[in-house]
Image (cartoon, rainbow, N blue to C red; front, side, top):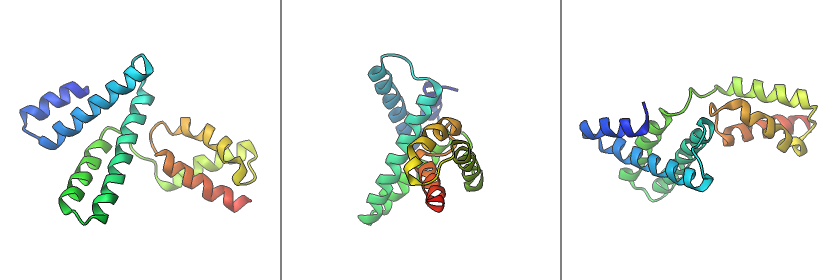
Length: 146
């Protein structure tokens, strides 16, 4: 089901949260397509969704600092709904295993190899882990080596 169909369903159900999030997603995807000059491939679309989730996490932190329970609840609900568009996320163990395989394959010896490892790791994740999570995992593994 595409975003337009989901929006239509949300409108019929009078689900204001889903309507707001879907409209935002449709706008963001459209802007990315205009910027690129062509349709987004599935991987690029996932990246847009992950960016929106990251943005909501930042908004959540700001709302917590400002002690705004209404904004906290909204941000959490939006994050939860946005995550339904992502593939099932990898466990920490599975992410660590994949990262370790790449580190071994490259013969990485410390933090200086972070860029090389990330370059191979991110395409393998296919949206199943955020680049932030992957980066932290790789950093931890490489620090143990170096």
